[in-house]
Structure formats: structure tokens, C-alpha cells
Image (tube, rainbow, N blue to C red; front, side):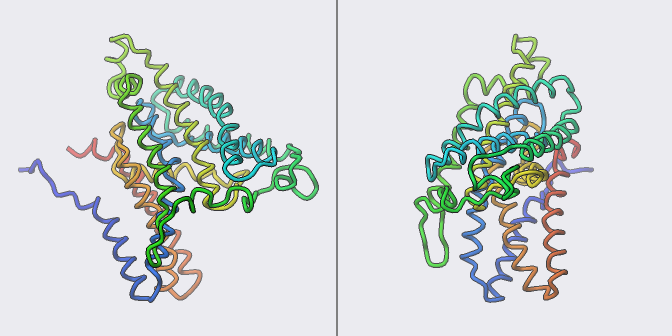
Length: 344
């Protein structure tokens, strides 16, 4: 006879693995504080991008594997923003502001597409994201930007990487950070990204957000009480695309450069993995899933490289182990999609 309550060990595996890596770092004489600092920074860097996956989960569209559509819109805003010659807070604001019209327009077109392929959203969104990155790459090649920081030496096309040194590199990362020994906590950056999570939580408690949840839970019932299902599905896709466009600016300021062409092609899977590792299943997703999952994912990526380098002295073996851990975590996260639905 099967018992109804089962002790779930899987959710504890990743935290235990992280603790093990921290112990190895300490034993090997590396600064644990520095790597925890890096982990916190990378968590903040990715959080808005991970958050961008959630609106479509709420509305029943499913996991937005094509979140890269928003990334390309964010890059378009960055090109326009950097072309103004601004720097600092104003430049980051302009990059985000200029990306919004592109994100809204692309989100509407993308949402209409997903409304026409109900039941196959996961597959179509993946290829839509790939296609949009390809279209963006064509645009980057033919553009002739006036700003020297953007263009290749021959004057044609956008650079593969556009450095943000002297523009807005680490603008949020260093904002109101608190240093305790070797540990530096990006308090300001944390406050900003948590504010985004808070605003999303408040939105989902609003009348519009509640209707979106009803559409995700039971579209037949939603339609029967007069809710326009297609409209709220479309709204969730637009919101997801806008958040992704904003998130890419946070991502770039932490790394110190914007990357163009196909650099962000696989980043959508990273965002999906972040929210799934946090415990999100189907349309059951919370802000805790975003925050916790993002922290787990980035901490594993941050710690796996130095641990692999110390444990495996061969350079090639360390890189293989790092890739194995990274892709293994993503694979694990993807297997958790809807996993609870079949465990009866």
C-alpha cells in the first residue's frame, strides 16, 4: 500500500551540493567570501530575466522558451541609447526606455503567434526565439552606427561585444554595497531586483493578474464567465517580453558589456532553468521560486569552476566537469517541468 506522504529528497540535493563545494573551497584555501559575493552579484544580474519567464506560466501559455525575443529588443534599445552619447544612470535609463517600444511591438506579434498554436507553445516559442535572434543578427550586420563604441573598425555593423567601461558598467552592482570582511553584499542591486519581484507579486494580486491566473488555471471556465482568454494570454507574452528587454540591461551592466548576434541564443534555457529549479511547476509559480531558483543556479555556476580547477588539475578535465555540471543542472530543471503532475 502506497503512503500519501513522501519525503522529497530531490529539493535538498542542490543546496547540499553547494555546501559541499563551499567546504572544498575552504579546505583548498580559497576565499569563500569572494565567491559568495560573486554568486550574489550574478543572482541579481539574472533575476529580472528569470522573472520574465513567469507571466506566461501564470496565464497558461507555458514556459516562454522564446524569451530571447525580449533580449533582442533590449539590444535594439541599447544601440539607440549608446548612440546618444550619454553615460551613467541616464544611459542605462535610455537603453531600457528605448527598448520598450520594440518589446511591446514584438511581444504583441509573438503573443498573436502563440495564440494561434495553442498546445504547441513550447516548441513554437523555442523556434520563434531562434528565428528572432537570426533576424536581429541580420540587422546588426547592416547597421552603420554613428557611435564608434558600437561599430566595427570598417564602420559597418555592430561589434560582437560592446564594452560598457565608462558607460554604466557595475552601476547597480556597486550601488549601496556593504562589505563585511571578504564578503561584499550588493544591497542596492538586491533592493532593485527584489522591487521588480514585489511589483510582479502585486500585479498578480490585482484584478488583471487574478483574471490572468484564472485563464491559466481553467481557460474554459474563464471564457464562460466572460474573460477574454486570448487577450490575457497576449498580455502575459507582452509583459514577459518587456521584462526580458529590461533584464538584459541589468545582465550587461554586471558583465561589463553587451553581446550581439547569437551570444544570447541559449540564455533563454538558463532563465527557464532558474525558475524551475526554484520549484515552479506548470502555472504554479511564486516569487520565491524565482529568487531561490536563481540563487541556486548562479551559485552552482559560480562555485563549480574554482572547485573543478582545484580538484582536477588537468585544465581540459576541469572544463569538462564545469560543462557537465552546468548542463546537468539545466537538464535537471527541465525534467521538473510538470513533473509533479505525473507523480500520483
